[in-house]
Image (cartoon, rainbow over all chains, first blue to last red; front, side, top):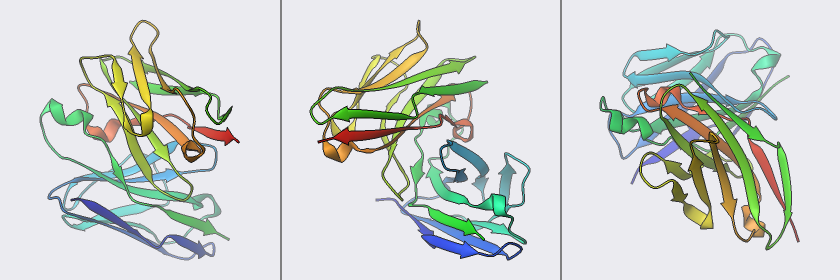
Length: 118
Length: 115
């Protein structure tokens, strides 16, 4: 069965410090990978998605970047954190396919990282 | 383009009462619709999804949702609430001709259950 691991679970970082959040998926090959941010009282905002190694699409301009160095590894980074980067960050994966039948493939989420920038 | 509106950021019901969480969508193409549940400090878990065919969709934990094209709605219901149903619920939509990267989520509804 497929599993998704995300760490750390919680993180407190000072403004201006770097960030690295890691996500790995097991039990599936060549998945779509996603980073979402969830702010209090607001829905999920898609930050990045990836359809393959080294292929990253950014949905919103921001202080963050993402990388996919391996097929099942997705990393969210920042060189200098801002207060506004605080939130709950969720990694997710879905089945990848070029056929329309894949467009209803659900997202499978990790347990999230709660980031507090102080 | 797609969008999702969840009416009511917080819903409170008594244990054993009917649960009704409202979701309206906007889509320029036939939609795929999803409901996800999120327990505290956890990721989201798929409850159910509508793709094609039967408009009444049954999901896990006794939840179901009905796709009503004329009302552009996909409300989530459960006949009898249980304390373990307390969580946040998200409605989501994607277009039938777009990739999973274009799944749009609503802002969520927090469900509380009164003993």
